[in-house]
Image (cartoon, each protein chain N blue to C red):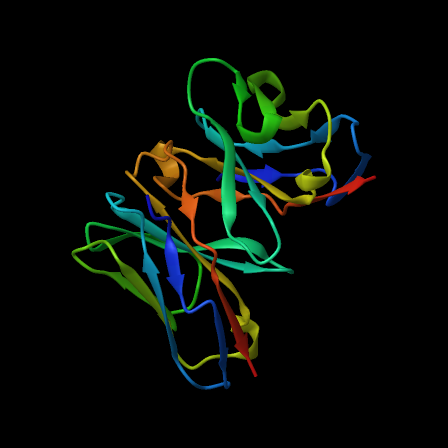
Amino acid sequence: KAGVTQTPRYLIKTRGQQVTLSCSPISGHRSVSWYQQTPGQGLQFLFEYFSETQRNKGNFPGRFSGRQFSNSRSEMNVSTLELGDSALYLCASSWGRQGNYGYTFGSGTRLTVV
Amino acid sequence: AQSVTQLGSHVSVSEGALVLLRCNYSSSVPPYLFWYVQYPNQGLQLLLKYTTGATLVKGINGFEAEFKKSETSFHLTKPSAHMSDAAEYFCAVSDLANTGNQFYFGTGTSLTVIP
């Protein structure tokens, strides 16, 4: 059974540009969540999608957005990149939304903003 | 609001010694509790979880954790450390009533195993 796949693994962007990250969840998983991981702030919740609808959103500016497609694949977009957006972005999928299934995480996309 | 506190950002143990990583949580309702492990340049891997039922939970790689409601704790233990256990460990909490599928993670504990 394939795991959660995130592409690309590494990305270098210039300040002011925008970026799109992709996540393919485990087959059958309908909930996809995104987290930002930095040394200073740790793991911070960005948003969760279920059945193509954003169900929950963390405390991030509007420059961070996402979407989910009918096949549960998800993308997140960051516009007008800032140096502080440099982080490991982790996608996680779960079978349901009951909070008790636990996440399966991808290996992440390492974004560096220069 | 939910929160997780992991005492000790860095823990060092000798190979073969007991591993104890501490996690305390705050939640207004019975929580779901998780431990994840992260190896360098990788995502997080689920070690174990507590949802309902038995308070002593066994996970992968010989790890276990005990949910103690009176102490609001969910400490992770392993009787004998192995070199391959060196990694970053994260405790997480979620609860359906307040946050649905959103997890709150602790700041992590980096485990070093000394040969």
